[in-house]
Length: 549
Picture 1 (cartoon, rainbow, N blue to C red):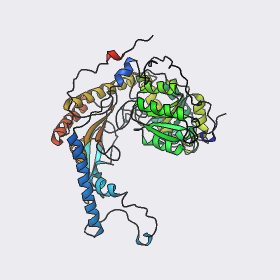
Picture 2 (picture 1 turned 135 degrees about the vertical axis):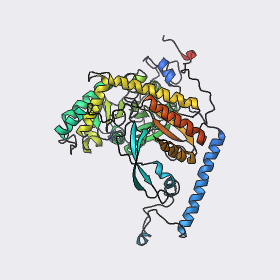
Picture 3 (picture 1 turned 30 degrees about the vertical axis):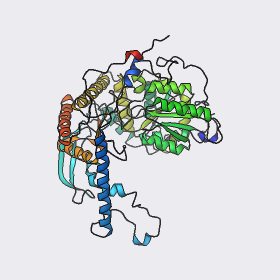
Picture 4 (picture 1 turned 90 degrees about the vertical axis):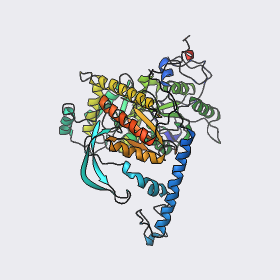
C-alpha cells in the first residue's frame, strides 16, 4: 500500500536511492564512456547550443549606476515625505496601532514605493478584447506619478500581442471551433461547485484524463483546475522529511513553493549544468543526510522543459542519464513546452526522442498551448492513483470547469488529428517557423537574446532600468504590446523584454514588430551584441559524435 512521504516509508512507485558501479544502459542517447552522461545523439548535440551572450562591461556599470541613482532619489523622497514636503500615498499604520508589530514594513516597501510606482504604468494594463494575436487596450493616465489611474474612455485598438502564452493560437473566438465548448456549457453549466471526490467528477473530466495519457504516451494522468497549484500542492505529496530535492536555479516559483512546503531538504544546482547536478548527486549518495548520514529516502530532480524567463530548454537526455545512474527520480514541468515543441507538440520528450517512461513525474499546464486553464500530472498508474487520494489539489480543490475541460479536449484532439483535420499540425509547424524567423531576425539586428532556437519564449536583454521603461512605452506607442521584466524577477543586471511567439502571428505581424524593434533599438541604443550573426543554421560538431558499439 502507498504511504505518505513523511512516514519514513517509500511509495511503491519511488524506489530507494542507491548507486551501483555499472555503466548506463544504452538508451539511444548516452554512452558510459562520457564523464557526465553527455548525449551522443545528433538531436541532443544540436539542441544543447544555447548561447548566453554577456553584455559589454560598460552596460553592467551603467546598470548598477542607474539603480544607484534611483535608490538615492528614493531616500530623498522618503525624507521629503517624512517632513511633510511630499504627499505620502502609501499604506501606513494608524496612530493607535503604532506600538503593535507593523503590518507594513517601510524598508521592505522601499522598492515598491520609490522604484516600481514610478513605472507601474507598464504593467497590469486592462485589456478589453480577446487576447489573441492582436487585442484592444483601455487607455489610462495618471495624475500622481502612477499611484492611481483614471480611464480616458478611449480604446487603443489592434495592438499586436507579443506577451501572451498563446503558443498555438487556441485562445480564439471562432464560433465554428468553439461550438463543442458552447454545447458543454449548455449541458453542464460553467461551474461544478464541488471537488472531484464528492459530486464534481464529470464524464468529460475522465475523458480528458484518458486523452492526456494517450497524448503523452503514459499509463495514466490526472487533471487539476489550476496550473500553479499542480506544482505547489503535488510536490509535498511526493516527498517529505528525509527526502532531497535537487532543483534547477531557474525553476518557476510554483516549483520552489511546492519544494518548500514539502519539508524536504532543497539543494539548488546551476542552470542546465550537468557537472553541478552530478556533483550534488554524488555527494547525496555518498554522504547521505546531514549529521546522521543515513541514506536519503528519495532524491527528486526537478526541472522545467522550457524555462519561462530564459527561453532555454532542459538537457533532458543528460538529466535522464544522471537520474538512472544515481537511482534518483525526475519531475519534469512542461508548462511552456507541451504543445509548443516537438514535431507533433508532445514537448521536450518528443524533441529529444526520449521515452516518456524515463520521466517519473510529467507535469504540464493547459494555460499556454491549449488556451484554457489548469494542469496535469502524468506517469505510471500507481503514481496517479496515489495522488488522487493524497494531493491537496485533488482532495480539496474545486473540479475544473466544464467549458475549460471541453476547450482542452478540443485543442488536444486538434493537435492529435482526431478531429479529422491537419489544423493542429499546421499550427505546430507555423509556431516553429515563426519562432526561428523571429529569433534569427533579432540576432541579425544585433540584440542579445537568450534561449534555445526552438523555444517560442524569446527574452531580449535590455539591462538598464530606465531603458526597460522606455522600451515598453515606445513599443506601445507603436501599437506593440510587450512584457518587460526586471529586478527582483531577474538578476539586477539582466532586465529584459520577454516575447512569446504564437502560431497565430502572421508574417506581416512579425515584420511589423521587428521593424519597430529595429527602430526602438536604435533610438534607445539597445543593440548590445558583439557577435556577427550568420543566417546559416548552426551545425553540430561532428567530432563530438561517437559510434554505437
